[in-house]
Amino acid sequence: MTVKDFLESLSRKIPGRIRPDNPRISVVVPLHNEAETLPELYSLIKDTLEPREDPWEMVLIDDGSTDDTLEILKMLHERDPRVVVVQLRRNYGQTPALMAGFDHARGEIIVAMDGDLQHDPREIPNFLAKIEEGYDLVSGWRTSRSDALLTRKVPSRVANWLMARISGIELHDFGTTFKAYRREILQDLHLYGELHRFVPALSAWHGARMVEIPIRDLGRNRGSSHYGISRTFRVMFDLVTVGFLLRYMTRPLHFFGKIFLACCSLSGIIGLFLAYRKFFAGVHLFQEHGPLSLLAAALMLAGVQFLAIGLLGEILVRIYFESQDKRIYAVRKLYRKEP
Image 1 (cartoon, one colour):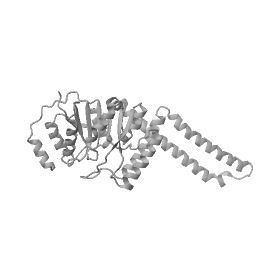
Image 2 (cartoon, helix red, strand yellow):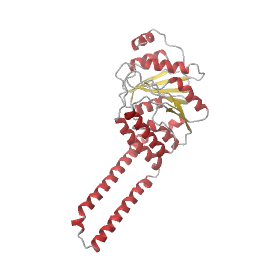
Image 3 (cartoon, one colour):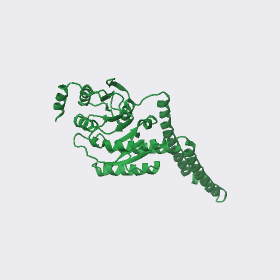
Image 4 (spheres, helix red, strand yellow):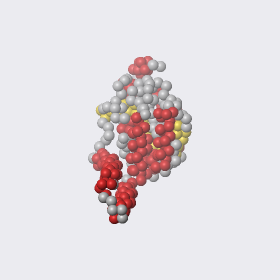
């Protein structure tokens, strides 16, 4: 069925009488120009969750789409009151879109997934089963990926390995959006930048119990990916941030103290060498070693300053948003049918 046929079929249907009172399960899906995949995505999620006794809702976020995504979302909302549409004012990116979905989801269990059909909604019951076993977070593991080797697979494997080493969490796939959460876990999280992929590490800091389950990567059969090699560099920068937050958020002096000791030790060694050259060799320091010493000192000082400014800036951003209860997104309109 084409998008046009799907829209026409929706316009001919009378809205149902299903009332999404107190949903137990919320499926959160950020969308950006996903008009081609949205009809099938909606049908798969609905067909998967309808046989369950638990009440559920779909929280679909329009992240500044320029195609027919919003039009389809509005018609889905009119047809099915379990569909909640969050329209953002512009394209903010995946992390802010996910946070918007988390903030507007009402379920006790929240399942997040991509909207491009690389994730199979029919696997949602596998995530819910693990939540019922007592886990707080269930993360998907793409055992076989359909992405390009050099631009996606290799950088992803390197990032996953580094994240596992930094966080001490033995997960194979930190990057996938396909995850299930208990609501209380998300209430303790504040995500910025590209940090949505590091939710397991941040949740573990709050004591979450988590497990990883294999999922299928169906590939993207329609449309084009919104991500390229440039995202790899953003991930690496966020990796540094997460590593700092996990280890030194409550004790930053332990981090900067190590750099201080390293700098002092290096400075002491250089000082001893210069003192030896001055008093035992009788050389003129500024004539023979001045430029090199000044250059080394300037580079070391500049490096420490830039690193400190960057990490302190990350902390200040969080203080700015959280202390004033600010959001990293702006909602233009919320479509929700109240009970």
